[in-house]
Image (tube, rainbow, N blue to C red):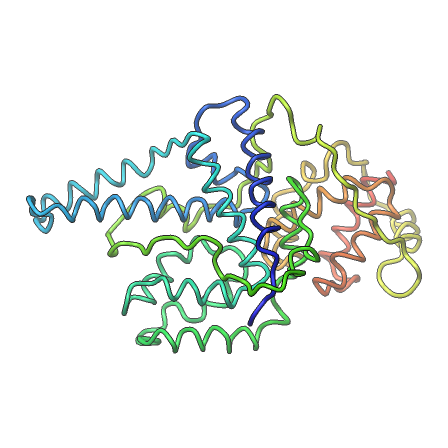
Length: 369
């Protein structure tokens, strides 16, 4: 799949995005830790691409040590000591702004490429894998793929498949054709970046230049190592609950944000705010209270899991962004217009199901109770 992109816009956007985030975080702190990176932005994919690059740098350092011709790194005791040292080191991530910001810029570019061209992105990942180790490479990096991962997960753990690079590349393209309709909306994925800076897909696609599958290819990883480290913890890392970084001296909210134009209900399908209002008004909800503050603070843990799984294709980023977008609406009618335009059709919601009704009840309590 060939995508025509405006590479200059992509680079400039990533620079502006990284500058804004770093201004916010480093206004109050000098260093960033690994856990800070996991929760750095509202886009989990951006955060994990930073971690992925740190993991690659970590492996490069290990390869440099092993290339020294004067010591026997194959010795069992040396191997164990070296592995322990690298594991401890990986849990002591400490990055200053001048080193973090370039990593963030690359991560933003890679996230956008993955959102808009998953086939090209994952085919490029296959090309970066060491020869005859494609499956091992994909398995090693699986924990860092948060968007469109279904495009390649079917290949991982299939014993004996794809010793040939071309077989993997063809399989990814064929699989995408089969599952394209069920994959997450590009608009919704890119919208998660909008908390920092809105991304204009129309501008991004207007260039006549061919798309580059990876804006800045990373060096090939070194040989596989038996590790138990911060990077391995990412495999089961829960989606971060904290949605924003530490309060900066000049928070993002002080900077002007264009408010999206939300279509109102026109009677041409979708949810009708008047019908919903009448339904929720007549039903008796014992002790029902209005929602004070942000929606995200009033979603119970069990609701969060249900909404993420049933309504947002398992993507916690989309749920967080939806709640924040609804918070910015000025009325129940405007909020339902947003839900209609972004989620009912894009994510194929069935309005009468329990998860949808429970979600809409929260929106009703936000504006009408």
